Image (cartoon, rainbow, N blue to C red; front, side, top):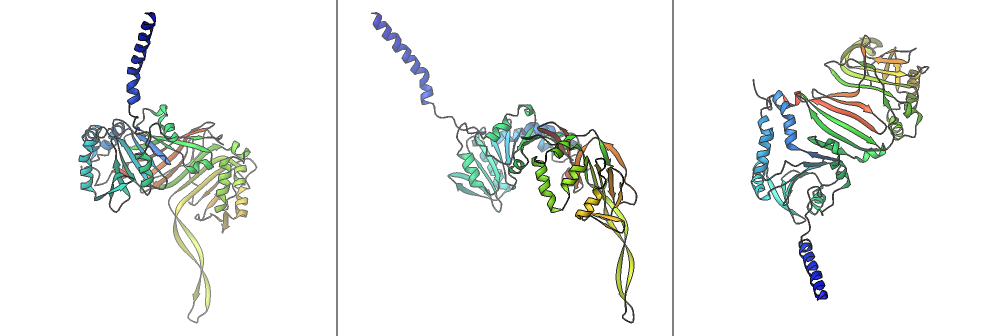
Length: 446
């Protein structure tokens, strides 16, 4: 009797275990997630569309952009839901330095997508293709493609459509790229509307592992906060301050650096030292000598127009066909040019070294740095040396900022270094949207 009860008990346990594990035995394999489909690229980003729309709303209102209602979080969300897009979860952007890029978005209902595809076909002339059994819509005359599956939609522009189709449409579960894993695990940026990571191949030459950036906004400008991470010790630190030229409304280009280059001087084997040394051959700049003598301050300013008189000799023929040489003066306008750098003590012969190397030339008490306009010089007996094209010495002030500023189509862009530690450099890239958003096609008429 005991044996029968034991057998029944064992069989009951086995039967119960079978009932528990049966669903898992017959369970179909999990489909790949949208993260599994993401292709590697030079630039990879996650975008929270709703949060981003909320953050830029102040900019749209400040500049009175006429279509700002179509960029509101409420409108974007309602439109996305009507087309089956799940933009309450992040969308993903991938791009390469060649110019190709793509956007991958999650779908919550692919059956609603057809309404959106019909609108797409209304605005663009498209043709349907089959690439590796995947249906693709191609915009005629362009390298623009749209394709989708049950849970994703992808827009891609570029030449590598077959490669992207294979990666995205034929992805396997648990196949997330290590590069994307690194981005998705950046928990300190979890509250940001967009996060971008770049691992350009060119970075390897400088032992840079990656660069991360995320945007912030105020009522007038966009700021991309950046973090550069190096696999080697960064070869300089920031100084507290140094001389800087005063910027004006006509400034086209400005460079201001105040760094301590001691480590770079002492480690010529550093990748950055080797990189700069290799680049200097194009312009015959005495880089090694400059680094050895440099005090860490460098300021450059270009902008505004300077009038100057220049003598030249012209041959003239008189009535009797005699040729005589006549000295004449012509007035010219050149773009304002100012350069300042600091040197270590007893290093003020660097100007003579540049003359010897041909990087600097002298004519009629004026100096020329490669293709610069004629320059005045100050600092023959000082560790601070200054070249300038204006008639009077340009004004300088003490500044604690290290940055590069340039102007393009009346918009000024600024890249700034904020802080540096052993392996990380923190900075920002900023620009105003005033001249980008304010025009008759984008803004309301008062």
